[in-house]
Length: 69
Image: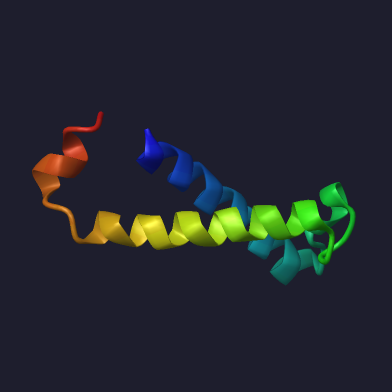
C-alpha cells in the first residue's frame, strides 16, 4: 500500500514539475496558496519522501515487486 501511495505522490510531483517546465506554472503553489504556504511545503515534503521511498523499488528483487499486485 505504501508503494502505491508513494508512486501516486511521485506522479503528482512529476506532473507538477512538467507544468513548471512547460508552462512556468506551479500547480501545487496555485492550489495551496503559494510556494511558501504551509500546505504547499507539506505537499512538497511528502512528494520528496515518496521519491526517496521509490528509490527502494530499484533495489528490490523482482519477486517482491510482483508480489504486491
